[in-house]
Image (cartoon, rainbow, N blue to C red; front, side, top):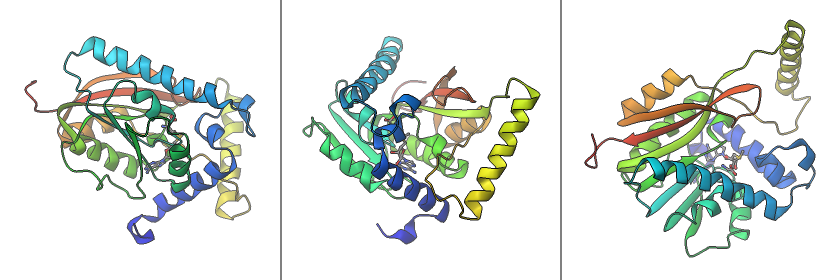
Length: 258
Ligand SMILES: C[S@@+](CC[C@H](N)C(=O)[O-])C[C@H]1O[C@@H](n2cnc3c(N)ncnc32)[C@H](O)[C@@H]1O
């Protein structure tokens, strides 16, 4: 896949993740301040993925008895934390990521190669997959790290690659939460402006976490426009305490359900 096929803004996102993956991949994925500089224990890190997935999938299957278990897509799979958790529930898991380094690491940690495959996808869509392919598209703490135009495009792609009647489960922050006090609000604004200027002037070349938000109404519009019904939009804690994060569950139209 040539460089030219990636829009510039996405190339920047990709480069950041490549660097983060080379420096401290577990911490780049789960930014617990106590686990910086290689502080994550590998087993604890992957166990967190198993617990998150068990929780999401058991809630989904308790509500709906028609969840297909053949194929699942883990979009933004990183080193495979959630993909390995998904392999306990599905026959075949495909993890995709924009970072080649993340995909290499995911391959190194893949203890179920018979069920789990990882694919490098440096593109702004899911052209690697045909229509109606997956029973479930799953994506946590990923869409928030790219600009909203790309996030919305991927959402429409999620619908395209899902089987009719299949499910789409993801998380995305809808807005920044206000700081508790006026002083903190201004402090945060000034710090953000300084960071922005430093990055623009290339004074600060450290990889950083882009955070983007998409309103619930826009998400509903994109999913509906692409042919899915939004079942749930519920508040969760997936984006940390500064953002109002929402968990979405949608079903692609067709497949015998109205
Ligand atoms: C915070 S990590 C989350 C990884 C995984 N979802 C988890 O929870 O363990 C975000 C991942 O999304 C990937 N990513 C960012 N933009 C992407 C894109 N446009 N397409 C695919 N992956 C992307 C990054 O490379 C990174 O591995």
